Length: 425
Image (cartoon, rainbow, N blue to C red):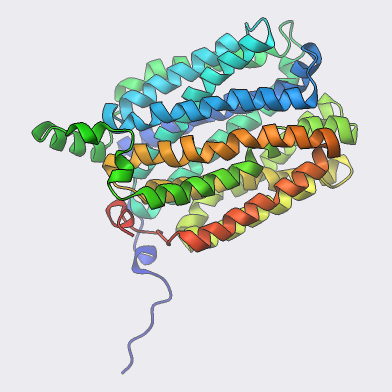
């Protein structure tokens, strides 16, 4: 008698652990907070053409402006790593309040310098909020649902971007013009004031805090380089490289599309706004399913679908002619640039122990990974001066295929495993 060979891992066949009442509330809170993070984050791409005209900026200067603002994602390193000392709860409430106030204040910017400074500060809090939300999702939800939860929360960020794209043309018609796009950003502060009382610290960090109280940390444990001293340097470098290469494409793919559509395809604000809205809405089912895909077929196989679709979508949305062919291609581009984030978030959260998880995000994403993030608009803005937005972004789309190769070269499969196991792989 032969033993049947299982077709799926045991972790994939077992019944899904139901979410308790608190997990459901936390799921909603993180989704809403990330929705407004997505709104605020995309606001720059929506107002950029207006800003360029009002402040007389060239393409190169626009690229430099975006690059300067994105320095805030590097500075966010200091906040994100604080999650391992201050706790997830305290940092989440701080970052939501911070990005809300910085976004609102941007609407009063009298010149490009103040605009850049306020948006840089806003980026610090926006990226830190996003990172700590991913840590919450990884630590507080069942292993077999982790990909789904991370994916849905990230999808709400994309949904916030849709909302921004949809309302921006209407807000441009108000007496405050592009500034009104930022005034709307005050809403999360009200939500935070109501919801923060029921927010708890993650169980994993609470257990860590209890252990620290019994055995206080040594001075070297507070060092900026402790993750390297603990033997995780290779993983940090691998994930930092992967984030950086991915950002070379995704950071600029949507940011400059509206300017491309205007200058190289002759579309007006209404046409490009409609294209972005329709494409974003059309991409949403795929974005929401991306996390579930990671739980169903695995992180690496899911990456093939998501990174592949993203590369093709970005290439075509900067190549095709006509509003509707461009819109369809843009939908796949938005899906790809949004869907790669749950893949990389899952790998980053799963490859490190609880006491280093915030530090790992800070190093891999906010420091090393953001090299590509900051370089992308700067390089693309300069190259676009010579060959245009379309040809430049066609080349940039290849970065997603390079990143996919790096995933298979460097990262193990982590589907369905507990964090304590994946951190040892």
